[in-house]
Image 1 (tube, rainbow, N blue to C red):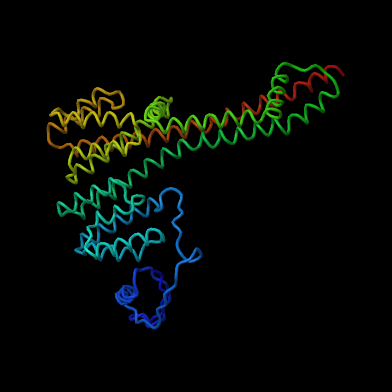
Image 2: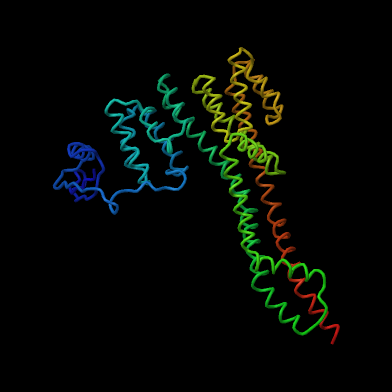
Amino acid sequence: MIYHYKGIDAQTGKEVKGKLTVSSKTEAVEELKRKGLYLSELIEKKESILTKDLNLTIGKPVKNQDFVVFCRQLATLLNAGTPIVDSIRLLSDQVSSKVFRKTLNELYRDIRSGTAFSEACQKFPKIFDKVFINMVIAGETSGDLERVMDRLAIFYEKEYKIRGKVKSAMMYPVVVSIVSIIVVIILLTKVLPSLLNNLLSVGGKIPLPTKIVMALSNFFIEKWFLCLLIVLLFVLLYLAAKRSPKGQYMLDLLKLKIPVFGILNQKQIIARISRTMASQFASSVPVLQILKMSAEVSGNLVFSRVLDQSRESLRGGSSLSHPLSQSWVFPKLVSHMVAVGEETGQLDMMLEKVADFYEEEVEQMTSRLSAVLEPLMIAIVGGIVGLIVLAAMLPMFSIYQNI
């Protein structure tokens, strides 16, 4: 329920107005007293389409940077000896996102009623993922929740940084390709027909390149629906493939086999898996659970199957590194570092070094790609547009020769 309130701030003496979302009037009064307000008015307002916060969010409801800041601030408060329930209440007053503030308020109410922090977080899977939940459970069990929150902040910070680098590297060619297709279609369907009709009405021989371009122009004008059908067919095939495990496996395999970008995708996934495993090993999460979680966060069925094989290998009393060494998706460096970690009992440290190495590799590769792709894409687009313009200009040269 929403309560609109008026009151006097005990410290400044100024009048304060606002609204509060709580479950009862008693809870609203207690909450405002904790904030140091002397209430003069408290009115309940029923939620409507115009007043309630709609959780119609696209993608993640909480920004990545906000979530990292939340983890760091929670770790700081816990390190200072602040109880978890008071820490959540303090942080709920500071976050800017309405969705996140509402979530933290609900967490506060659940924890105050006796629910464990990890159990309360499980009600919001879009905000708190499985990695977060598992590490918090481990932190609650070991009594070291503040250190776990520090590790989570580092984990998400590095994960978002690498993911952003890869997205930016892949976004440029995609955007330029879409713009190029739009420009070519406009040239072929709008500009070129009127220009060629004017030139050819004067007379002159039609060169072969011009005939090819004219045929493409007529196809786009008269058979445009076939292009839409072809695009729609590819979209339907893609969606159908994603719904079946075999089809999804083939798509994930294709992502790893694409020249240049496949290698970049492979390195990013290895960095993500290594960072996830290192963080959870350091937080004393059970190893079989770590492998299951790493398979889920990999986002690629090819990697997931190898990690599932490693889990079965461990259950059978074998080593973790053996299945990794037998698969082409994990380079020899990874399996060797894991084997050394198993032998020395420092698996979390070895996995962290693997994660650092591949994160650095991804950063360097994205920087090189950005430097190479920009002039390359400009040259390709310029070449395509240049060929179309040349095909349009060739009849003009033929007309001048006949004069």
